[in-house]
Amino acid sequence: MIYPIVVYGDAVLRKRAADIQKGTDLMQLLADMYETMYAAHGIGLAAPQIGKSVRLFVVDGTALDEEPTLKDFKQAFINPVILTETGTEWEFEEGCLSIPNIREDVSRKEKIKVKYFDESWKPKEETFTGMKARIIQHEYDHIEGKLFIDYLTPLKKRMLKGKLASISKGDVDTEYRILAPLRK
Ligand code: NI
Image (cartoon, rainbow, N blue to C red; front, side, top):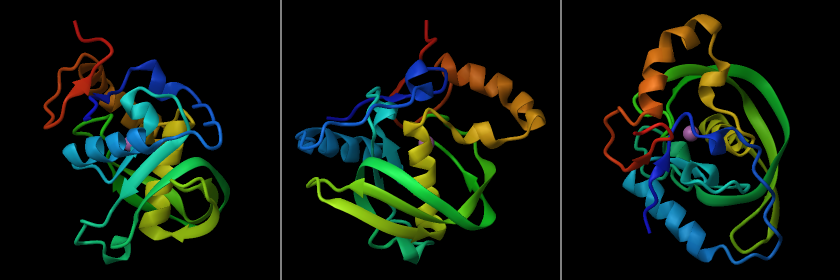
């Protein structure tokens, strides 16, 4: 099932999501999240973006030709915890399915160590670098109630105010179905 994507302005995107009880059957939810992400041409999707405030996200960067390092990067992260973020900060222009048609440079550390459960509830602890780390950091922010625009300067934020207000009213063009909190 393809869910509509919850967009900017909805309180679910600002909540710290809850841990999922270990062993919970997530097969259907995971299948729906992948389907929803693919329908929107995203490379990552966190559960709050489909209105579910739980600590889970999926990623798939395997189709990104310009990033060969992502060719095997398709997986789910359940109850993830970022343990460390190290290395030099680097900038990259990020976007988000919940903030359509806005892209801005965001600076993030290059290396992370993360522990999580995979889709069979197997505990994992892994180090990721570069673009993989960035995608995880962006999705992880979603389950912490954070968005990439939070990193922008006050001036940049002010310049985006009008666009963000339009998004929350559903007044934005997308190729995917959205759920806008202030749509009349
Ligand atoms: Ni996002």
